[in-house]
Length: 161
Image (cartoon, rainbow, N blue to C red):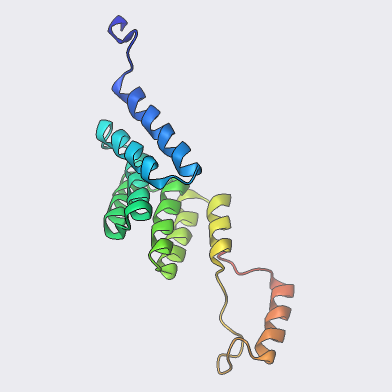
């Protein structure tokens, strides 16, 4: 074990880069975050979190939505019970204008990862809406608006949120 004294193990190096990635992401610097995510992934290519964040950041920083989606799907294939992996994939779908797929992904996350508050908050942020009560009228029609307010008062927010 003494051969590691004064140096960092590969796992530690990957974690250091991943922590830097998260710091840059929090600060809104997706390009630098992506650089560190790729470095961490190069050190530990089978880490689902490194895969997922590399995918998310490739989508955000480089608009490579297909590549990002594939990496996030691969991460979910490795570990399907962690909320953050669903959140990352859903964010890619939202960024690329695929709102229904984002909602579907988050709903799957609620089932697979448990009723995580971050997933519920993401669903609320997307603003899932129920169908109008009177389908033959537009949702902005005064009758649908009044009935919708009553429904909300008696049943609460939609089940997805």
